[in-house]
Image: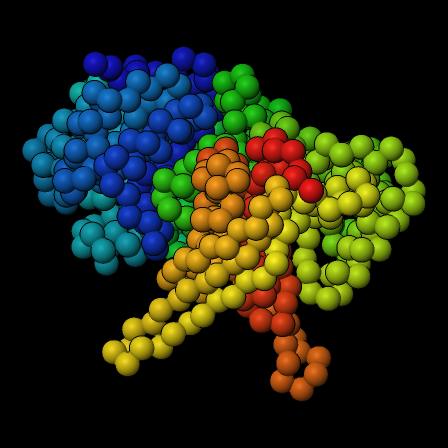
Length: 538
């Protein structure tokens, strides 16, 4: 049995990285976290090394109450402290007698974050109380929780809008929280409407006028949440609240990963344990898997396209020095540089891609020229290699080795779709292949013509290549390209295949979806055998 940590073991207290994925992030449309999900994310965040993990609102719903009970027993926090979230006491009550305040204490969390009203109109219209009573609620609740031995942070909800409407009242809430014992008072851009220069000016003024330790909580409705967070740091904030991958209500919150990367790499602040920054890409993608959302390919620092280069001009410069077109070394955040091969590629792109794939082109200008020519010609016909690295590697090896990488040869294939009188459909495929001197005829049914072809191909080839049993088709995309002759069109298919140790993508182009799919399947199986170390049969 494990117990909760009493505090971070590596981060000092001069600067806080505070994660609120489990509460604010969970408010994103499409995210529905179970207790098990929340426990898994908490472990990832602790591994990453954030200082505080806000787990939710105990007492507000059974799920969050259960999370805190289980987290105390099941998660060994090595770097982070667990934080419970709640509100100040009700108007006219005493904090010690307020059930939701008591639930915060009973959660066992060593740190409590209180949400407090700092916008005068919200006090009068939402809380339906007086401005003085609201300030008393802040003082009373913070003081009570401090008496219970809890560390207290106060989130001043709608602070920036409230400051614009009534700056003196907004500052009075900050003073009340700090004087009652709150360690940090967090200025919240709850509606997400602020811009960086505005945030910097307000934070600097509030810091000078109150002397309180300030934090920042920024929503991303203007697309400025990360910039607003860093602007607040520039003005003196020493506590940043973020969510993993920017998850959150409406368009989201300040994204934890670019904020932390900027603090570590641009501000030279040591806010993570040594070596943790290099785990950032892995952590980002792992959390995306838990919440069941596809990782954003174009997310700064951690997206698969964050260090991907397509233009030939870029590749020529990167060949000389990668820093010429990259603001950091991708390895610093656990990512990698990728060269995208397309009709925009030049010789440098092909040479760098070959090096990335472990294929030594040996400075052979004729070979590189042939590859460039084939790529441009095939992309004109509808192929795309930037999203199909496996098909490109097969093309590159074919040119480098002087012949295709051949494990089998297709004699013919056929797919039949049968409409039945009862409204059901039957899909059957037959393939005729040659492998290692044997003629193979295999038939299979599937839940569609492409699935039937895939199954028939697998049934036939697994007799010769048992390694194919590990392969699984995990993604399938079809795009109809613009036609050139009347109503005719070209179909492009991208297939992603996995073998338990990795994934790869292949492309096929044809006059119909079945023909294009067959090409992509041939490449997928060929590449799978190449990955498995099987020697070509022909």
